[in-house]
Image (tube, helix red, strand yellow):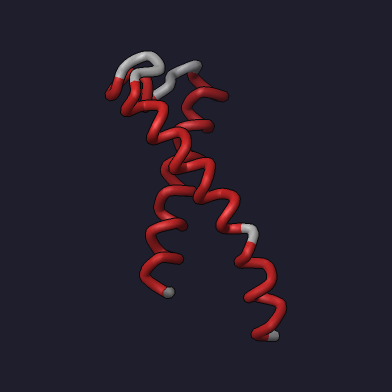
Length: 66
């Protein structure tokens, strides 16, 4: 489970950096690398979004360790 948590965390960081680039510079790195809403770029966005939803479970685990 710990490995999955690290993978999810990396995906969330990638998504956050991409959103930061969009917000500050109007530069979408995923679009530049994989194309404008190509199948692969949509998969990347979906996986990052699902990672964010999974990360909600971190709150419950943090609370249970305190």
